[in-house]
Structure formats: C-alpha cells, structure tokens
Length: 187
Image (cartoon, rainbow, N blue to C red; front, side, top):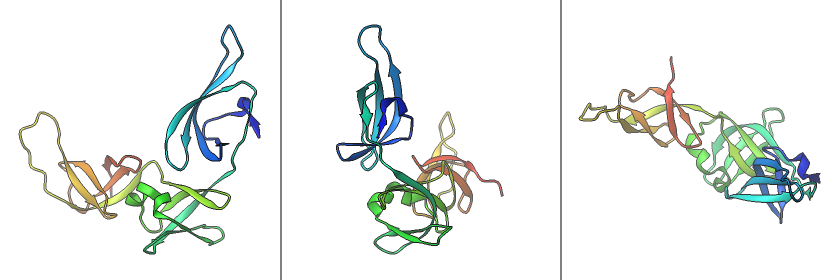
C-alpha cells in the first residue's frame, strides 16, 4: 500500500482488480477545499487510458510488476519463447500478450518482459530496432513537391514506409511502437 503522495510515473496500481500504470500525475492544491492528485492511468493489459482523481493522502494499492530483460528465442507455433540470460529459465508468452511487438522481434534479440505474480503482462522493445529490408520496389521520382515514401517489407514480415532512396538489402532503424522509419544504419 502507498499513499497518493508516493505516486510517480511508471508505478503500477491495482484498482478494482485491474492493473493500471501511472502515465502522468499532478498534485493540485486549490485555494478552497482539500488538495488532490490528478492522474492519467493506462490499463496494463488493454492499453485503455483514463483520467482519475484521488484525494491527497488516500491509500492506493500498488502492484508488484517484475520487469526483466530477456532474450527472444523463437516462436513455437502457439507461443513466443523468451529466456532469462542469467538463469537460462525459459518463459512462454502468448501472442495476445506480445501483440504488435512480434512484428519487430528477431531471434536472439533483447526485450523486456513484465510479469505480475508470474503471469506475463506485456513485452517491451527498445526505442529503436535495426532490421534489414527484405523487399521494396525501386523508387521512381515523380511529380511531387516533397520527398515521397514507399512500402518496404522487413525480414520480420512487418511493412513500413521508407524514403524512395532506400533499397532492398539495406539495414534501417525503425521505431517499434508505431513502425516509423528513423534512418539507415551505416555499415
């Protein structure tokens, strides 16, 4: 248990049996009335975002979320298998929990797996990943006033928009949260 004074970004709360992560919080002390804490909470499982207000000093139940860096090993047809590098323990995670992160994971890549009471909650990738382009059509200069983009398929099967000058076989840096092209990787 913690009070609203202990709230900070990233803290996971257990509210009505659901896990909510604190995205943003603000302590407010108006001239009239008691102080309160205005928060923005994100549901850990569904991703739903809500605003919730707590009175100052109220006790809130915190959840113990274990975030560990793990190595992605392989997809066995039904689950994704991750390994702890220290103990070599393997954990199977369902595709529903992995979600869109699967589009940007290569075997033997490092990811963060968050668990609560042994149950995997979500898989978090680094802010950028480097992947090779498996296929993209050649860029054709046309009638446009600014630089254009074209679709490219990565080795993981994900499709991203890249500038016209990027070709097949090149390594690119991609933001796995939204699939945005960040730049080419120098050899």
